[in-house]
Length: 270
Length: 128
Image: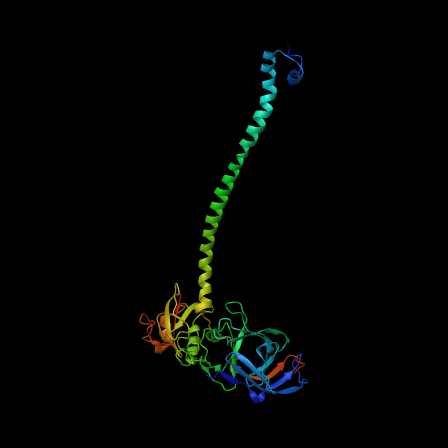
């Protein structure tokens, strides 16, 4: 997974204005807009790259190519204080309502009450695969699985301590957080359910999680094996095998931390 | 000597200061009873100040040391506060912040998935 995605270079136009978007505002050439890790990099025609502290107030007209655009405004920028590499940028974002013209928070509050989000190169398919998409990106909020997994340290543009790409770990993490056992993009958990995840490459260590028991081992395509489902009321083991036939024979007590997998997790048995 | 026609104290003082009385009768009856023993010796010095200063020991000692300091502050409050707060707060904080996670059922991507920037509007920057 590339660290950078140059976004819609040919189509991008730059407007400089203190007011709302207007066709009357003169347009200036823009060299590029990139997503670098989780940061927007805006390069003007004269080569000047806007610093992160220059981004508040910038409005991005975002589209999917269908002609419909959404106006997203960067209201504030901060570095993720939990990121040991200090490279994850977090943005307060708002979106302009097309009808009323009002600006509203783009993100719902995360578990810590913060409304933050960031871009990430590529996109997700309907079955939950994170793929490269030339010149395209996604915006995830810190309360979503896609954002959480980056902040856990599984930066898809990075390599792990052993030199392997973290992209598969990121993919696996998103499956894990969403309890997407089958790897089909369907989650089987509830927002706010506590989990403890860990790996064997030193990004998330295996620490004591009082009261939690082993749940499953995970790979990029979903669960490798499942000792028990996270929330029995949402998905019981019988239904799990029915929905994920490839897990037959891999559900039950034989599933443990010794199973070859990228990530593992514990949760409260409920 | 007659005692019944006047108040006893006046008569006693007068007798001491100005009347020469027979030694045996005057000393025995007036001087000892009314002036010397009651006002100076017993009430002011010995009993009132010294003895009741010791009352402070009764009030201070029991109220401050026994009840307030030891029983209420140290034992009751410390024990209750730690038990309830520590368990509840720590387990949730630890899980979400440090090494655990809170599950999310899905993304909040909505339509902001696989999109591109088609225009940029900068805030007013006269220098540029």
